[in-house]
Length: 508
Image (cartoon, rainbow, N blue to C red; front, top):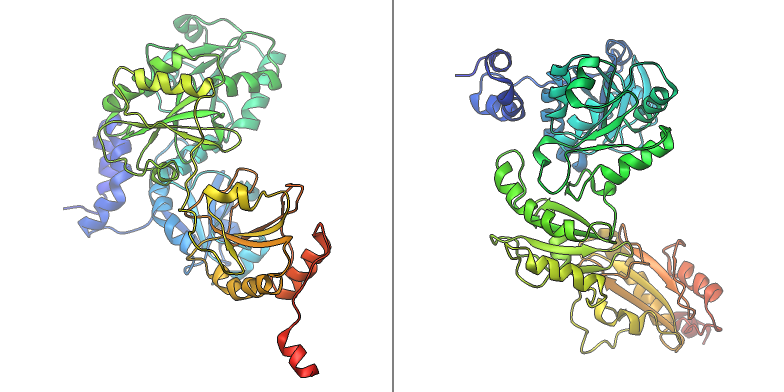
């Protein structure tokens, strides 16, 4: 049976390799054990906020509202992260403030949405938290924030611990306070949110690893070690902050990085991602089995305009569906390419263990032989209403027609704002139905792909597309008169607006 001291016992008795796993699952164990339910997230109030935050070198604070759906989604991840970070070195406390009760504190820090996360150092607001919202992501991000931006390594044992970790680390070997060291530390301070840094001047460390004074080296994560690329990459050139930054960003991911929801922005496109049951916690050997096959292909295209990654099919199930690869339940990986322009190329052939299918797929893409995939509903057989229904398959013909001005709404069937707009949008279309030069259209953006130049991040999103085919986002009002005034102003030709029937009848 679990006791209030079970978590302490785990830390003292279990070997290092198992402590992290026990900490990660501790909240669940405690819940099912039923004997200990205290949270490691510190609750702050208006009365004690300043004093308690000032007790710590660094603290992450979540400003939340109990009714907020995003806050509820974050809560279990935040709890797990708080428990893990409690036992890191140095430890990083996580706290929270209920903004429905502690209004003075939330107002003081300009909280206008939930959840809002902020980092405090020595009692003072340091910065907004711009990291991931998963437990592992929070732990990784805040671990980099804690302590100095670059950890000083004084022994071979410390260096071995760093080199065998799960995170990429950039190490500077400096035996004096040179200008190169200062430039390295500047980079560490600027990039501490994205990766780990360490530096050493210990002769035994330089001798052990065979590096010289002034060297800067990338140590890739131990679990990503493979026979297709070196596990370390040494910088060759003058050590300046800007040049080092470029070197690190170009080499940090290697031939084939591990893509996660937290690091997507670090991957360059065009990107070929291979999706399967990626799990470096429970099945490192199986995960690297497929990654090595991807690496073999990636090696053949090294230096060409294509990048590679592996990703968990469960974490990216929505992305797979957008490629038309929704069924990811099979044993074989799935693959797709995404370009900078947003074009998508799913691999239709079955993935082969020898990598031949992936090799041919990549070569066909580079040779320009592939057609981008568009998720599309069928083209409507009948579309006689005043608002024209557009799908991906007829988008070019309807919206990008050079003899029409088009107002198009990208909507979601479940969106409340879209439902409220619908009768007004219909009325606009009814008023303009006799104008052959104007098209009022709509597209279900959850069932159809919009072209890359139409950025849709929320619903409803509207665009005006004049005859010159240079679309611009509609930022006007959402009342009928607002739309009519806008269209009259922006239309290529004079607009014909049907007279109001009610008004005409009253005049008679």
